[in-house]
Image 1 (cartoon, rainbow, N blue to C red):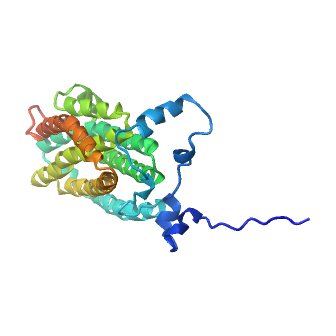
Image 2 (spheres, helix red, strand yellow; image 1 turned 60 degrees about the horizontal axis):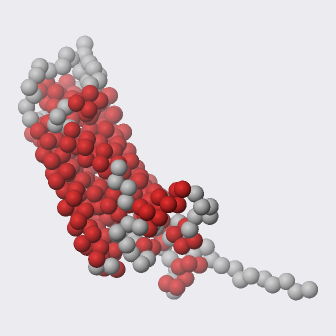
Amino acid sequence: MKTSVLPKRRTYWHLEAQRRVPTEYEVVTSKLLYYGARGFEVNVPLGAWYARHQQGSPLGCSDWERFADPRATTYARYVDLQQAQEAFTDGVLCTIDETDYDERLSADWVEVLGRVLGPLRYPLHGLQMAAAYVAQMAPSGRITVTAMMQAADEMRRVHHLAHRMAQLRRTVCGFGDDSRAIWQDDPRWQPLRELVERLLSCFDWGEALVALNVVAKPELERVLLADLGQIARRRGDPLLESLLLSFARDGDWHREWSSALLRMAIDDKPENQETVAVWVTRWSPLAARAATAVATLFDPPRSSPEVPCT
């Protein structure tokens, strides 16, 4: 009795049409989401959510698998890239630890930091959650990979801000203790709080992507990274500017991959351009109002400085 032998298939069989050996990025990011073509194996309520907010999104494309991250970011490449970033930020923070840097900051500037650095962790965490939602709802594994790496970048920012706060607490007793109260009650933070909460309740994956990476993040990063960094340098805090510049490099990639994705979608379906324009128009006033209000936090202090630790 003869037994049939199935031909061996390469792990990258689905890429053989390219007639070349695929790159590592192509192998590890292609065809990761089985349900895109087959649907979910079990009919559960979650399926209706994806049908409405993913497949039913006004942002459409005939083949989302054609997207390619301009940086070709795999997990291994992300670790290599961020290792260099982390070495830089660790060097900045170690310099502060090993010198009397914080003791030389003016009391006025420390007060500004008190109403900015601590509360800033909350909206950045919100941006991390929004990026994770885009990753969860993305219709292609490659989009999921890039958005998840972006979420990791956002958490990196939160981590280093918490580290910087811990350093300042050694010089200023109770530094950051009122961060949550400031975030929830200070009128200058409330437009940004509204923006973040609206982002977290934006369920259409395409609109969530555009609102986050095309509108909100560029507007906020201009103020909270670029502008704040320049002010920090003028106020005798150049190492904060260095830290914020490191964060800004992550934001450059977030904008780059989002632009590449939307260009592909618009080239595939020109009507996507109008869809994106509608979303940009909807979210831009919220982002502009948030950025304008946050910028006033950098004004000269209006109260007495905190008591230094002894």
